[in-house]
Length: 536
Image (cartoon, helix red, strand yellow):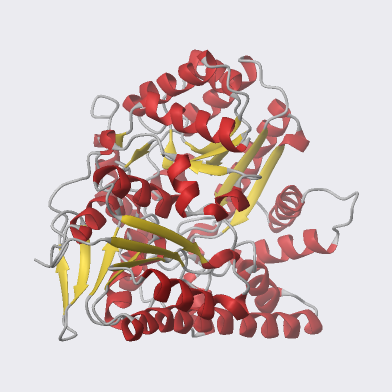
């Protein structure tokens, strides 16, 4: 045991401008549990790059905090985001017929890799500066990047650092109370001798104890919060995911059991954002909103309260439609649903292979429920994992046919297909399969800056990869202010190309690992089938 902390400085490491909800929830929770502790927040994302080091140094020397908690959002070099588009770069480098565009893509790729490499070095340098200036201060590192790559981060951190995996509230409470290592929560701890220890989660955090954020307090320790109030603000309603999608780690990071916040506290938080800051756009940050039968009832309570209070907001989030009812669809629209955002593949074969845990027929019926419930012009955003392991010409054409059904249902201009490819994450079933098949080399570094490995991690292999890429690049070439939305144009181009190739060809046989993948899926598919509505 060490002395209880008297002060904490939260440092949001540089990333693109997005509401720092994770750090805010942790700071609010610690204040309510230990109100005597002085806390401050510094968001380096909104500090000019040339000033970040000096601003951080000054703040640490002024406060001399007992704990410095860094929040690290993104780390993988292939993850497209608003400040760069790795996907577009890879498409052009690998598949553009224009030599000049391929050269430009190569320079852009080098720039992206440099930025990511520099950002890692810079972030660890911030931590080392903290240790040098404040040798007795506890350093804590958390955030989404850390939850995936915690061991790597811990090895690079200064001594006496705790690297938190997943939820920050219980770990931070343990740390400010003076524990040598986190007694609740999952973390890596680098001790004074540089040894890294791993602490397993002893219990899940009781999310029902998380009350509405006290924004008066948060504003007092983080005046820069106003920088984020003109866009979507994140609010979470639950944590945990019982599904086992083959490319996702949410169920490992947050746990398999869903835990819920109290609906009244959630809506109190939304109302406070609305009345104090004028926020009218809410993004529910759950792994998936409305994902199980039990969570559907929880969602309904939240929506009922939004409607009862007559809050004038728009809201959205990643949505599952397994257990949608006509009544719930109506309440979603009445409470301010701005768009339907969901993973989508228009074939049950690919749904099963990726163990997404729903029936396509269910999903299409749910779309119709929205249409019947009074849908007007809300956007339908389809995030499509094209060319996932097992994809064929036939499955792609089936997906395109389903998209055309949605055009007819909602109007073509309101349906937005988003083109993306599976990013291979460490520890997922897809990664294990691709290691077994030799697509990835055993012992590969998931944080490599080798561009050829990075391209593999953004999974879009032959024979369909070049076809999809050319369809996308042709759509981009045709863009002007009056042109079709690029995702719809890509799917149109893809349909035309695939039909020209001949839809009856047996392209499944061109995938050397497809048979083993099907066996791999069959062995695990019963897990998803067992997750029936009675268990949820």
